[in-house]
Length: 250
Image (cartoon, rainbow, N blue to C red; front, side, top):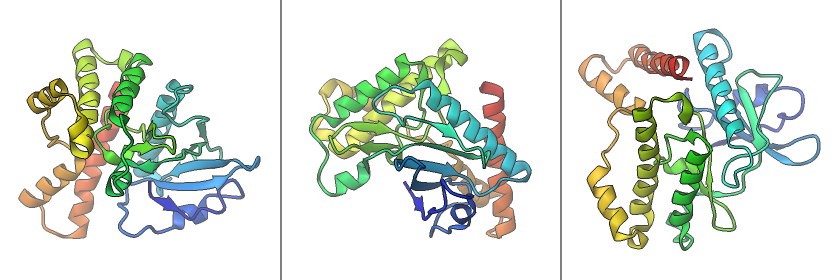
């Protein structure tokens, strides 16, 4: 997670957090801040820069959606707990501090815990039993490894309630999550993957070509120049397509 220096969160306002510039961070990425609440416990605060206009409305909807998804998974050992909306900022939510290191960092240090991916696979299956599909498990930044070596799933902005999806889409969502686990398993600890899962992964995994990042690249390559104004138009197109999806499905 990227972290801003948000020393005022839990105090007067969110302005210092919103004004913090994180090198290389995209305009649409949330700012993640860690601070202590009034009781002295550490909490994670997730907020967006834009609060006004169409972008502000989009990010409020996104925050509200993630809040509802996190409420559905309260009580699970591998998801953020104590989720709350912030009364001072409509596009900010917070939850209890999650102690863990990104899986990529642990891999670089040569420290993937034994049987970690078996536990991650089981965790995702348990998430589905709770009625939620994460839909971005294959992103290594969304998987943390706790100090005890257990998986933690974060960033539920793309998650969907399975009971709201048609049967065929529900099956696709479960498959997407499990293939996301296998993608990371194959990448970071392939030697421990059972043969039947390796075979399933090789037969079914397809690289996602419909991500916003690849859409923007294709849009620029074929239709627009390198001007910043046109790049902003492409970004706005992606944002409102995502908003339309959230409004029609949730």
